[in-house]
Image (tube, rainbow, N blue to C red):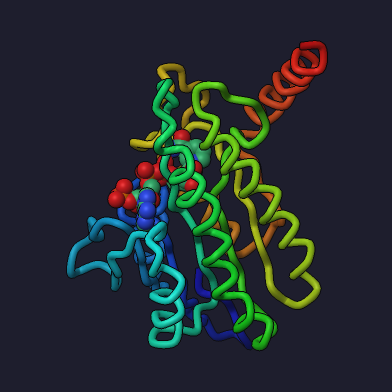
Length: 239
Ligand SMILES: NC(=O)c1ccc[n+]([C@@H]2O[C@H](COP(=O)([O-])OP(=O)(O)OC[C@H]3O[C@@H](n4cnc5c(N)ncnc54)[C@H](OP(=O)(O)O)[C@@H]3O)[C@@H](O)[C@H]2O)c1
């Protein structure tokens, strides 16, 4: 949202990664409607079309992504904030493990590459904000989706660690852990306490103002998953 500076409303320049669908698209619509300067980057074209914000079509798991991003930042930057929403889910169907590494590349490695490209400029300026969308799935073992679970566990640990490292330099990092959100991503047939993409987007937009290191929503689902994880750990311990 536009930030206040000596009584004047300043628009922010925000890079959204993975915003052609789902929560990223909802965040784009919300920020664009508020008058923010939004630029998107996704595997697919923007659903908002030519009347929407500028949008670059790029696969973030492609080998050329780091170079494309550096070039893009030099051309379009500097950005005040980046919201990383891209992810894929893959249900493990044995004996096919062919997508496992790809899930880690899209969900985790591309996020690390994106933060690495933005952070030096933000450190020089003494400000910046990276928001990453993780999941409450980072807190339990999931035999049906090991790569998704592992990518989100790595994602959350990395972002919270980076948040603690960068905060004293004026650079904020926020890890958002959502429960179920009504998009094409969740494959489970049981989706308790599910939010709409617009509800999830409101939490993301609020974080641009409040800069928490981590936000877990809904908190009740987070507590239930953590209790389940403790039982799982006991099972693993005695297995
Ligand atoms: N939905 C949930 O229940 C839920 C729960 C917890 C956390 N989350 C997290 O919230 C974030 C957003 O999820 P969502 O539900 O909005 O998912 P989604 O509707 O599937 O949207 C994911 C976005 O990422 C893009 N993307 C995927 N692979 C890409 C690639 N290789 N290169 C560039 N862009 C790529 C997609 O592009 P395409 O349009 O081409 O697919 C799409 O724009 C994810 O990090 C997810 O883990 C979601």
